[in-house]
Length: 496
Ligand code: NAD
Image 1: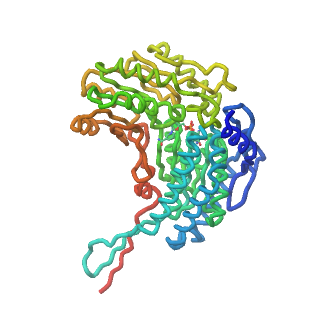
Image 2: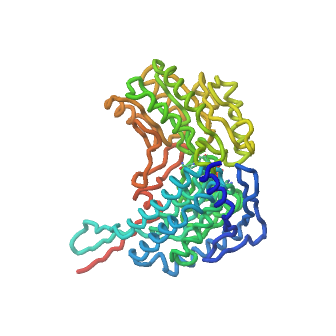
Image 3: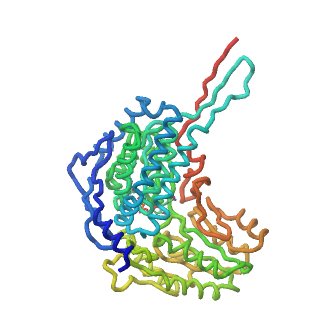
């Protein structure tokens, strides 16, 4: 073991997670007294016993959010003061970076190298970005007759419910709450069952930063109970969700069955990576193909899980991809030299293995296809590449959310675009080619919320992120995200 490993392991032992909800500025155990074991998927050990909140806790959180909103302590606060509070929150995330990174690593099995370099600094940067935006947003004056003055302003909606998944626990929460809070709303955040710890700590840090009580409430609980209660709550004005398409559809039903709250959905994906024969550097493309699917063990909504490659270079590219996949070090997420950790849970690993078995019957496994022998738990899977698949096969259509790459050959540009668009998801796509005109043509025709050219999974707080079709609607990140959390109001003055 290296010194760094010992250091992370030692620090991990010292982490004392917050295990209760943050409601109305206080820590609160579930009213039912129920708790759920939070399991470290890398070791199978119980990390903490977290309050398992239900409908009555969600109700208390919404009530606290509404009271805070009506008091104006945040919703009516000067933009400059809201900005300073969110800036302080970003600073506190940086100051507590190691702890937050460890919480996500221990809770969700994410690599410590990712949580320290991507998730935590990324979350702080996003909050900082929206903090800075707060006092730079202007309203409008409509071009009316000179006897009239029509002011158009953006108003916060009220109480925003946010339900998030486990793959980027801290960052997904921040994608939602940073623009919602920046716009002046109160938020009730429900983290995923598998990964509530960093969100609970964030709720505490927000209070420390000076966010008034009740403005950010964090309520851990399971989806069908706490998530459903938030979706159905009659006093929630908007619900922003990231997770599976199946559950996204439920939120539309909840809204229809309750108060017609606005619903914004970021759901699944089956993103295509198109590699054309005029790609400049096949090694770079192979490296990116692997990063596109094996980052975070493929548990990424925009994972490039379909590789579409021109027949003339298919063998050469696949040889490189397989060699790289086989070289990936799957291991302890606390070890900085690991390149892939466990799946988020043993149950999820079983689900992925089930789909790998389906793929075995549908195509040819070029590498992987099994669990990693000798691992401490059953959650460690091999990077897997499947070839010779029909475009309508299950493994070609279904989101695996694991380290499984499905490979297809194509003969020409038209076939490539047809294959890429032959999915009910439409979240992201990548195009590899050295021809500017080809890239331009293909990118225009791809149905995807983001098209990355000669790179994979391009993403930044400055650009909108989201999809079409079963990948959902509404956009996270960028100033456009503020549209979801504000309503336009016209105030009309008539004078003689
Ligand atoms: P999931 O849909 O099972 O759970 C997401 C959230 O919904 C969790 O907080 C969960 O508790 C809650 N939930 C579950 N059942 C519910 C119910 N019946 N009613 C109300 N809430 C319920 O998804 P997951 O397994 O946590 O995450 C994986 C999925 O998330 C994948 O499909 C992935 O593509 C998607 N995802 C999408 C994006 C994106 O931005 N498009 C980003 C990350 C993950």
